[in-house]
Every structure is written in C-alpha cells, then in structure tokens.
Length: 362
Image (tube, rainbow, N blue to C red; front, side):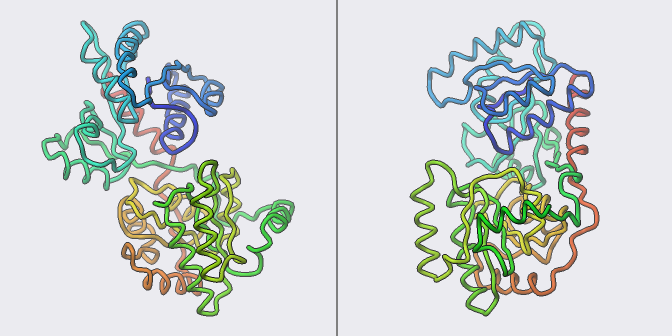
C-alpha cells in the first residue's frame, strides 16, 4: 500500500504509478491511498486499487485519518505500507504504531531534500528508507546523524530508454506544428529548459544565458517548456519583462507542460538544468542524455551527481554565470557525446524496489 497526498502530477506521483505497475505485473495486490487526481484513472486501469483519503491537507483535522488508516490497515492487511510524503508518513507511522497484533512493515521514500526539521525527520524513520540518489543518503546522514545507515537504501529513479531513443527524429507534421506555434524558435541553436513555472527552476538564469550567447553573435533560441502554468502569471510577466529588457524576447518561447517531451529533446541543441535549489535526483538530465542531447547544469545535488558521473562536461559551479556562458558556447560548438548506455532505467528501479519489499515481507 503506497501513500501520497494526491495523484495529480510530478515525480512522486510518477514513481507511485511505476511501482504500482510493477507490483501488478508481478502478481501482487497494489493499493494506493491518496486524495485522488487526474492520474487515478491510469492507476486503476493498470490493475491497482485506489482508496480516496485526503491525507495531504496540512490541517489538524487531518489527524482524524490516523484512526481511518489504522482501520484500513487492519481490514486490508497490507504487508508493506510505503509512505512517499511527510504528512502521509506521519499519519501512517502513527496508525501502524497504534495497532495491536500484526503490523505492516513501514517504509518511506525520500524524494526531495526537505528542510531539516522534526516534521521532516519522519521520512528517515522507516524500517527501510529509499533514497532516490546518493545525494539524498548523504543529506539524511548529515542532518539526522543518529539514523542507522543500514536502513538507508539507494534506489535511483529511472527512465524507460525506449521512450527516449537516441537518434529519434520527430515527424514532419510535428515539426510543422512547432514552427507554426513558436516561429521564434526556428533557425538558430535551440536551448531547452524543461521545468515547472517556479522561480527555483532557473528560468531567469536561462534568459540571461540566452542574452549572453546572442550578445556573442550566436543565434540562440530558448524554449521554457512547462513554465506556463495557471497561477504563475505574475512570475511569467517578470520573465517576459526581463527578456524585453535584455532584447531577447523575440527568441524566447514560454510554453505549458506537454507530453511530447521526446520530440522536444530531439530538436534541442542543448538541454539546461539550472535549479537554484539542489534537487534530489534530476530526471530530465537522464532523459536528455538518453536521447543523445548534451546537458548543461549547476553541479549541486542530484543533478551534479548525475552530471559528474554521466556528463562532466556539462557541470558548472552553481551560480557562476560567466562559466555557464563559456561552457554553453563550448557545448554548442563541439559537444562530447553522451554515454552510449544510461544505467538509470525504470526496470532497474522497479526490480530493486520489489526486491526490497520482498525482503521486508519475508
């Protein structure tokens, strides 16, 4: 039984569905507890069950769900209760430790580098704690030094290489639609920053890089894919104002999230990962490198870990704009080839997680 706040979008939700699919394929019963969302239909279509419970709302009233979960655990008798977020983890931990008789095994996955606190500490209290990178493991041991290292299991996130084939060429119809939708992206060297519309993702730094490259005589274009989201209008207005001030607004496209990321990678000359806050993993780095595209990013957190291992030429000291500009020029002129095989696969992640479940369940 996996627990998370909701099933809308994001890396936590994606990992939940990926493990649910692996459980069903292996003949296990897979149950997910959440407030539901747009991914619920896909979860259930894959053979998993869903229990709707709002376990992610930060309110004292949410504590009433401890009793609900305790009853649920008793009725359904799961072998494993796997919490993927802090509030669901607290509720599940309290429910499990209040049970009499047989208890399910309590497991957590740390998907992000949450600010150290008593509230966040719950994610290190599982019988086993899955860390999505070595960065996460080191972070937990640094901030919670009394954590038993033997309980921490590094299981990196993974991608399906078949979804990001090297040498893929988009269909002519797709290219025509892109030209019609974003004529400002045509004719130059295309930079791609796939990220949500939040200040921490480095959109402003990407626009500054675009201006620096164009100022150096390079016909660069920038595609901010995924930045245009409802509720982010003020932030996007600030980005457009920055682009106008730097004289690059005619070489910038700010786009909504889209499902054709494979095609976007295929037409890009350089993929950027400029999150100001260190990330736990950095899935877009793996996706882009699997597609054969060079990646340029700040060398911190999980992104720095991945670049250091797979593509050191794309790693730049965080915040060094001059080095970022120089490295971008180098990668646009003569990029080293990404590794022929990417070790971070979806199949490896699913297999390692199910093996951990099986060891815990005996």
